[in-house]
Amino acid sequence: MNTSYAGEFLAAPPPTVELRPREPLLSFMSDQSLSLMLPIAVYWVVSIIFHYIDDHDLLAKYRIHTPEEVKSRNKATVHEVIRDVIVQQIMQTIVGVFLTMFDPPDYVGMEGRDIWMLAHRFPAVPLPAIEFVYHYGFSFVKILGAFFVLDTWQYFLHRAMHSYKYLYKTFHSRHHRLYVPYAFGALYNHPFEGLLMDTIGAGLSFKLCGLTIRESLIFFAFSTVKTVDDHCGYSLPWDPLQIFFQNNAAYHDIHHQQFGIKTNFSQPFFIVWDKWLGTQYKGRYPKRGVPPVTPADETPEAATTPVEKTADAKKEE
View 1 (cartoon, rainbow, N blue to C red):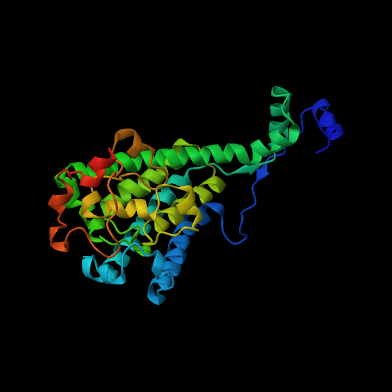
View 2 (view 1 turned 90 degrees about the vertical axis):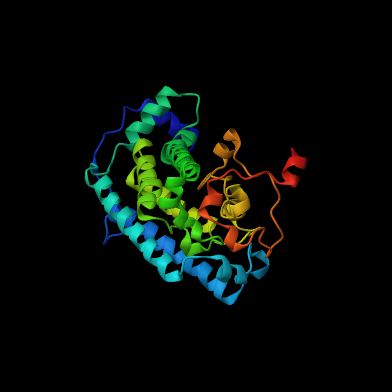
């Protein structure tokens, strides 16, 4: 936008507001319906890609664990994993319908007036910058806030699941039957835990941060991709999610091992709560393909008792 046009825009009276319903992204589906279906579609598409990579051993050098460990150490069958994931996705859809059914329609037509008011409130800021912040910056901040709300909710619930033996044995131990995580097992949980930690946590983040339906599409889809990537079983040096976020597949895999099960509670985005509260794993990861303990030692009781720091961790301190 040139300077003369910006001056004319500021000198003109406020633009007329002409409210009209926002056109859906897809002509055959409302944005509300898309927000419910997109996370499920994304989950299985990304999971199937990683499953294909697993089956054809395309990225063997980046595996965190060997294929033999996946078969020998995991206690849940593929059928059990798929069943429980589908149950959780059905529940999240039902909760999503409830969360969005009372939302007012999304209207457009007030953008010009809003930008005009911001331009007069902050006359020193260039008009293109105000337009950019209005269209993209506000949404970015709200979605980032939703990330933090979800991280906070999941950290304290997740840590509680490991702090109280009843909660671990009754609910969270099911997720830890996958000692060697893989992509489509990301949402393998007890139904109650899945409802409380993932579904309600994401719903609260959506509501508390005031996300629009369009913003929720980004938030829910990105959260899903991130969760699947965290459980993919690969440490990928070129994966942007694993580069940008310290809370990645290698970080979360430590939590699935007996030696690190009382650490690395943060999920799915940042590790700030682990850092702030001293629950970040300090030891060294064992050699690939060599579990530090035998499967027989990996019991729910082990998950609810303090883990002694390794000699390496003590040296680093």
